[in-house]
Structures are given as structure tokens and as C-alpha cells.
Image 1 (spheres, one colour):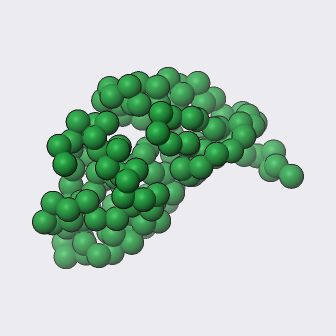
Image 2 (cartoon, one colour):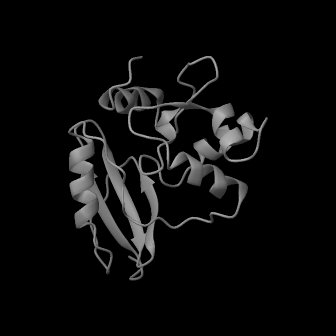
Image 3 (cartoon, rainbow, N blue to C red):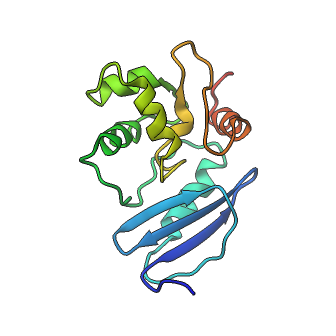
Length: 154
């Protein structure tokens, strides 16, 4: 049974499937999986256009509102990461420092592993201090494809 307060949107990208969940306040989760579209009030039209542009290799700053607690450690890290530009990478340590938590690279790694909004908050752009890809919740192969799409030389 679907919760009538949630809208869901399935997007088939060239090399992955994306499944978004939203409330009237904004997007609450993104998963790299299949699902069905159920619209209960959230307008996904702009997001679909932005995804089309992104997967065509164009720089995109996703404009949809997101729902996450910005006052927590994780929220502060995700807010900083959200500003990381298309085609650029940042290390776990650099991200920790920019969020005001120098020395917390491992904790940032945990935040990346649990990012509720991958792609929109681009955890695929986070790498190790020695320029290795590190991990990715949906697999290193997908991380590599997303970075290549953005023009990153690996």
C-alpha cells in the first residue's frame, strides 16, 4: 500500500535506474533501483529535465528542494558537498575541513555511505586523499561511469 503523502518517480538513465521519493517539502531519498511513478503532489518535471541534461553530459545544479537535517554533522557535510561542482572531485579530508570538521575524513566516509540523496548530493565526487576512487554505495563501477560522464579523467 502506498503512503498518500509520498510521491515517487522512476527515471531510466543510460546506464542506471533512479528512484526518487518526495513529500510536498522536497525529495527525501534517491536509490539506484527501479520503481514505479506515483505522483501525490510533488512536481518532478523540472527534475526530469535536469536529469536529461545531466545524463547528456551537461553541467547541472539540481534545483529540486531536498529534505534532510542540515544541522547535524551529516547534514553540514552534505550541505557542503552539494556545492561541489560538476566535473570536480574533493577528498574525504578536504570535505571534512570545508564542513568545519578537520580530521574527520573517516566520519565523512560514513556520511557518504549513508547519503540519502546520491547524485543530487554528489557523493560520487568524493575520493581518497591519494586520488583513488574510494567507495560508493551503488558500486565503484557506477561511480566511475558518473565521473567519466562529468569529464573527469580517471
